[in-house]
View: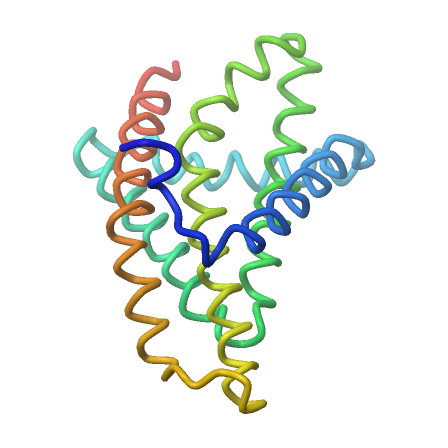
Length: 187
């Protein structure tokens, strides 16, 4: 699949907006005070601990289901004026920024970048694309209510989910496989 085919023109402005939100939130996460950072790290470790006892296939399936549910939630609830997609992108980026800072303090910036890279290559683009469709649906819903959009919302929702299963879902499958391998390789 080529990069241009990953998303269509309908979401390009939304993808740009959400990418900027992601970058700003990631940066904010790297500057969070240590007390908040420690609390977030403990929360992440507790969540990761839930996965440590799972076998490979169960772990993969659990991660995939969680990521699919989260991204579908972002698309579906984007109809509510796009608030949920923007919040989901911002909160995920903030958390990743906190984790990156913690990893960079422990092992340096380049090694920390390698630790977050698997998420950045598959999972983050999947989230950004799903959230872009959610934001687009929110704009289409508002335009429809205002009488500026003649196409039924159902048509837009169908388009968003066709693209979701063509682009986002395959990215999430690869991300879940990588995340499974990383978790299973931890001591």
